[in-house]
Length: 117
Image 1 (cartoon, rainbow, N blue to C red):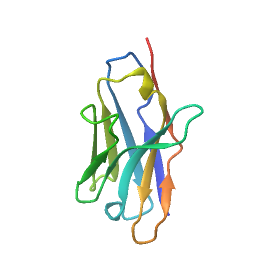
Image 2: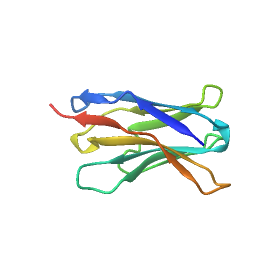
Image 3: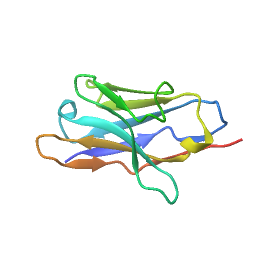
C-alpha cells in the first residue's frame, strides 16, 4: 500500500513558477515509477511527466522545456518544478506511483494549480 500526499499548488500569474511536492509513505519508494498527471475541468486526466527509479524521465509535449520532474529516493519524494506557466496549465495535479511488478497505480488527493492574471 502506498500513500501519496501532494503540496505546493496555488495561484500564480502567467510566466510564473511553482514547485509541487509529493511525499510517499508505506512502501519501498524506489521500486515505483513516479509521475505527475493533471486534470482540467471537463477534460480527462493526462500525463504531465514520469520518472523511473533510475532517473529516466518522460514529459508531455506541452510541458517539455518548462517543467522538470525529479525524485529523491532517500526522502521518498518526487518534485515537479513548473516554470513559464501558462493559463492552460491550470488543473488539479495528481501524484502517481506505478508498480510494474504488480500493475497497480496509486494516486494522491490532488493539488490545485491556477494560472491567471
